Each structure stands twice: as C-alpha cells, then as structure tokens.
Image (cartoon, rainbow, N blue to C red; front, side, top):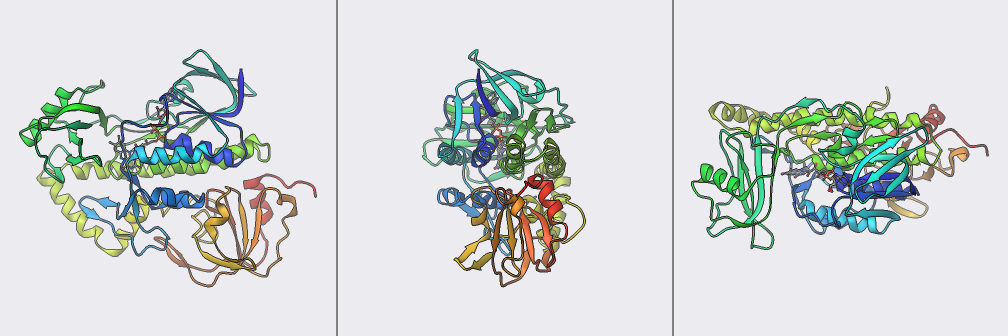
Length: 488
Ligand SMILES: Cc1cc2nc3c(=O)[nH]c(=O)nc-3n(C[C@H](O)[C@H](O)[C@H](O)COP(=O)(O)OP(=O)(O)OC[C@H]3O[C@@H](n4cnc5c(N)ncnc54)[C@H](O)[C@@H]3O)c2cc1C
C-alpha cells in the first residue's frame, strides 16, 4: 500500500491550493482526481475577488493569473457595482478569468512542486484508525495517509463517508448552464425577470455560446438535455437560437448547505465539500482556496509534529463563521435576482443604499473577502486581520511584506529597534525580519489604525500577535500557532 502524509480527494481549485500549501511546508502529499487530467471541460466560475488575488500574491503567483485575465470591479449587489478602487490594497479589483484557465494555471504551479497526482480514479471510501486513514480508490488500489482532506466538491464522498451532517436550505430555483453552438444571433447582456437571471455570451473562440438560464420550475436532480435547454430558452426569449452540438450542459441550484463540522478525526473538509451555495456573487472559488490557505500550514505543522493536533480545531473555528456569513449573503443576492415588481422595488432601495460610502465599503469589503477578522481575542485591530502588503525597507533594500510569505513560512516582522527580538527557540520555524516602514496603516473597511512596533504574521497572511514595543504575549502566540519552543 502506498503511503503519504496527506491524501487529498479532489483536484479542483481547493484541492490544488491545499496540495501546494502542504508541499511548500515539505509535507508528502498526493491528490486523487476523478478527471483523466487537469483539463476542466465545464468552465463554471468566471473569476475571483481581491482577497483571493492577495492570497495568490502571498505565494508569488498572482501575476500568472493577472496576465491572463481582466481586472474589473467584480462586486455587485442587486444591480449596483461596488467600486473598491479606493481600497488600501495592491489589488483593489477582482479578476475575470474562466475557471478552466484558473485551474490550468493552478495545475502549472502544482506541477512545479513535489505533489503526486493520481488522475483518472476516484476515492470510493475510507476507514480511519488511531494512526491514519486507509483510502480506497476506484481502480482497486488503496492509499494510506495520516490525514485525508475532502476537497471533492458539493457531492463529497468524503463528507458523506465521515457521517458529517450537511444542514441548510433545499433548492428553490435551478439554472441550466451550457456551452453550445447556435444558428441565430444571440442577444448581448443579462436579462432579469421574475424567475431569475438569463444570459448568453460568445465564448473566447467565437464558435460556441455560453448560456445560463433560470428554469421556470425547479428542475429534477438528473443531468439536463439539449431539449431541456431549448424549452427553457424558448420560454424566456421566444426562440432557442438554433442551439446544437453542446460541448456540455449542466444544472445548478440555490441549495445552500454547510457541513456541521469541518473535521471528523483524521478527515477534514474544505471548499465546496464543506459548503455549497448559489453562485450569485461569484465567491465559491475564493472561499475554497482561502479554506485551503488556512488549513494547509496548520495541517503541515501537525503532520510534521511541531504543533499539537488541537491546532486543527482553529481551522473550523475560523473558517466556519466566514462561510456561514457568505452563505447568508448569497441567499440575499439570489433573492435580489428574482425581479418581479416587488423585488424590483427592493433592488432600487438596496441600490440607493449601496451607493452610499459606508454601505459600499462594508459590502465591497465583504464580497472581496477583505474584511475577514478571525477571533484571536481582544487587542490591536490588526489582530486576526489580513496583514497589508506594505512597502518595507531594510539593510538589503526595498521589500514587500507579501514577498516574505512566498515560502508559506511565518514571519516576525520587527519594525522597531533592529535586533530587539530573540526567537532562537523557534528559529527553524519562524523568520525574523527587521525592517522599516514609513507610512500609515490603512485597513480596508475599518480605516487607519495605530502603527504597531512588530507583528507576527501567519503563513496565510493573518496577524497572530501585535507588538507595542515590548514582547509581552509573543511567546504565547508563537507557542499557540507554531508549537512549543525547542531547546537551544
Ligand atoms: C454556474 C456557476 C458559476 C460559478 N461562478 C463562480 C464565480 O464566478 N466565482 C467563484 O469564485 N465561484 C463560482 N462558482 C463556484 C465554483 O465553481 C466552486 O465554488 C469551485 O469550483 C469549488 O472548488 P472546489 O475545488 O472546492 O470543488 P470542485 O471545483 O467541485 O472540485 C472538486 C474536484 O473533485 C473531483 N472529485 C469529486 N469527487 C471525487 C472523488 N470521489 N474522488 C476523486 N475526485 C473527485 C472533481 O472531479 C473535481 O475536480 C460557480 C459555480 C457555478 C456552478
């Protein structure tokens, strides 16, 4: 039986991000992916928002995505675009890039790292014991791992196999989504009516058309056909535009559910396997990739034996509330798409509010994921929030904060007297960087905060400790996040 420290079921955006994070932390990791290769035929998502670009920037790979996509103001509520171009981030925008390209670029990054990928087979089941998990594959093989991560999407076999509840709300609305050829011209733009949203757009190759339409009644839980799509289009547009030769057709719904627990013993869930929602707001990929960025370094520390298993509980404590809030928001967004006369009136009211500065900042910060605040206790406003990508300077010249995070290792950033910290017992685990920063500390949504004398930054870019000129609380924070000190 082949052994790995971690096996990941599913090589979508979440699984690939998690694998990369583990590989950067020198963990022996393997992905099992049902598809024959990394090519995604059904391109569902059309991009992601600011914080996800920042997370990729923290690993030095944001430029690969930015070079192929189009930056734009991607946060929308009702019919109002929430412009965040004045937000204090290096990326005050979202990125338009189809999911098949996002996955291709991620797969290219993963290929540069020591990650084993088993394409063309499924995880069919598993059993866990005190020391690990036996993972059964559809080709008859099995793998042994210390931990199994379920990144296998909304219908997760791992979630079901672990017996984890998936409470939430049943579907009330379904959409057909497809890529087809047509014999007639198609109208441009989005149409909203009492059922929901409908849109047709030419694909990049100019040959096919991408169609999204809301069905008049909730569709069955089976694969849709070209005839279903034809009927749905005729109802909305009076014609089916002569659709033929489908590349793919799929159905999605507004079913909204969240795993009651993100962990059952040695089994963890991240991404769509832990939460599903209607794609209104376009936040699914970012949510999953940020789950992975939160889990990766923690799981690596546990697997590598530097931190106790209890560190894994913080994954659920931090990420469950973020997804719960996002799920509520997508339900509101979904309701706003259903434009009968009464909902149109609601959209008008929401639009007036969303144009005001405070609501714009609040909603823009939320949709872009720039407002995330993990509850790490009382203290400086930076505690538990994302570290800004400041332009620093030190004896070696200029440097950016995010450059310090490329290797996914924690950083103690000392902005006070050089040499004033001694972290010898953690020297193997935490980088100590003396640097200067001249400028304000401006955070999205909450504004300017008092300049700290030092900050302890976790590998996922969130601040774990803020210094006031002393080292009070630093040892505790280092022990909590990066394990007990080693004898020096
Ligand atoms: C129409 C639509 C539009 C969307 N638009 C956006 C958008 O604009 N922005 C955005 O951020 N999100 C959007 N989303 C959501 C986004 O597509 C998902 O949230 C995202 O793909 C989740 O990534 P994941 O890796 O967690 O899961 P998935 O992408 O579902 O990946 C799971 C992977 O696991 C594999 N797998 C499944 N079961 C097994 C098994 N048993 N063994 C091995 N492999 C397995 C699958 O083949 C797949 O590759 C949209 C979704 C839809 C349906």
